[in-house]
Length: 152
Image (tube, rainbow, N blue to C red; front, side):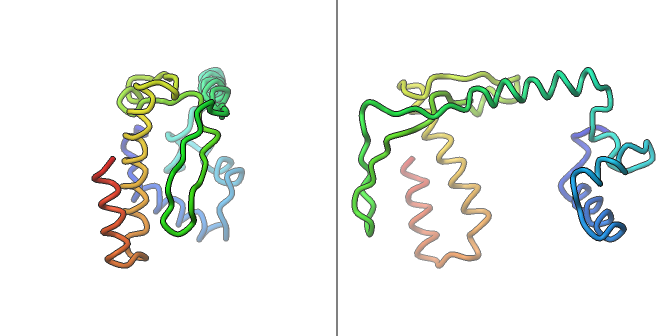
């Protein structure tokens, strides 16, 4: 089975079965049982240590870029009930959404291209947030969030 065939539903069923069998889910415990070639999640993992190490180092390199910097120009955002909030820090780099499927890369956040990308990411994050919390919001709150989404 390839990683693409591990749908969220399949992964959820495997996790549920693990919890039923062992009483809880811990990453260490799950990894231990998934080492068996007969385990349904076995193919999710990279068992070739050199390939797994390379992928981990790539992850470390991506973590290295997670830099927040002070902005020279402070933006002011008007918050209806809370007054003004000054945004003094932000990401130095952004990973453009459209390039992520091809291995990605980073752009400087404090450029016109970066500002455009940040708006696209804000829109995607807001849509995901609304999808998760829509049931907990009133119709007016959903409408306000949709209005914000449409303005980005």
